[in-house]
Length: 485
Image 1 (cartoon, rainbow, N blue to C red):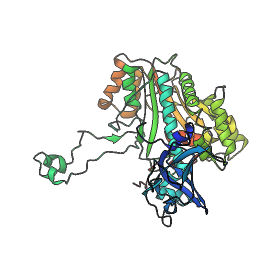
Image 2: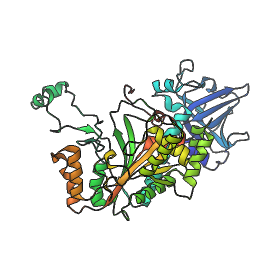
Image 3: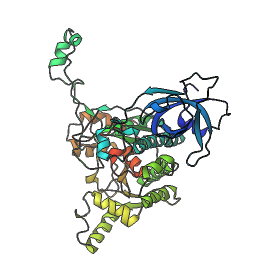
Image 4: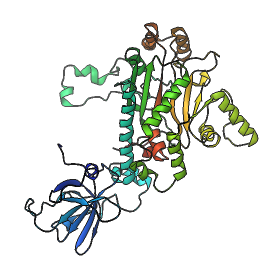
């Protein structure tokens, strides 16, 4: 091993022979001193479980240990006789022939407990957001980050097993894939560095207002269109990449910077939207199955919502298919409920109207009581790239709605018929389609039936971890009016 083992690795490994010394580094989580023995909990972030260190006798340096201090400890890893942990690190005061005095405890970074912002008492969410550079030292945020890591690894495994190729797509783009007009525009900052100012080529580039790329550029809101281009040659592609949306919403469901799992594939069976639903359900059940009952999920769900957690566990472990329901049937059910319970919804449901959050919550939490795919929305409510159904009114798309989170995944069969796609693009963008000719070319030159979806990664983390506000589902949240660090 190139580096010292992590605490997670030490806890998973067999206990070493008693005479063998082990060195472990981390931060002091807690310290408790008694007359002849002291106890400290050490964490390095690799596991939700810390490692208990037991200091027997007058060990040099133990009095200098404080909460938050970075340390390196050397001792014997043994089976723990106490409850709560299987192993512990024993550090004894008696001399060891293999260890110089003072090397059993090495303080690598001191921490004054009187002013340390991360105290042992409960800290409010807002307080931790204000200290975002330190909040990963709390159990919940550290568990959330590890949960993200595990979900990402499981996603890679699932897509690799399905023959997909991971692809890197641009962050900078000239298109707004969603057509919502909520993209961040890129502007060049004038370069005032002396070397650039004195450069003979700098005058025209640093002072005028020309676009750096000779056209407007934005931070991407979706990687879908670029993935579609790759899918016409690689057949099955996916990415997990950051996206950006300049949406002023202050709700707990929106971020300005977020991560999206997006996948596109050609030759997808019958080409029906229900095939895409099948794939997404299989993906989620595979990715989440060994996570929702794991140690990090235990930390995040601790203290409540046990019924909600059990519902997620049951949904992921169920052999039965999740509910499928057309938009038309969903609206009918909403209208019937509104008729039976006047004033049940703030927004009147009706065919051709967008489903509001309150509608989605009622469908998933009350009507279905579980995840539900709502399919075949009116084409007027969806972007141009979705395949028009034979009725001429709806498109072959879906939204996956899950209880207590709302929309988790959105996807569709993509419109592969060049003539129909061009007509829909003219309806959306007018007659000037120069910037989208490449997208039409994908259909003109060997265009194949294909489909795809996008999943909000932070929403998945929130659903699996019982996190109500999406700002606690990402290490450094950014939203309108707020960007620390």
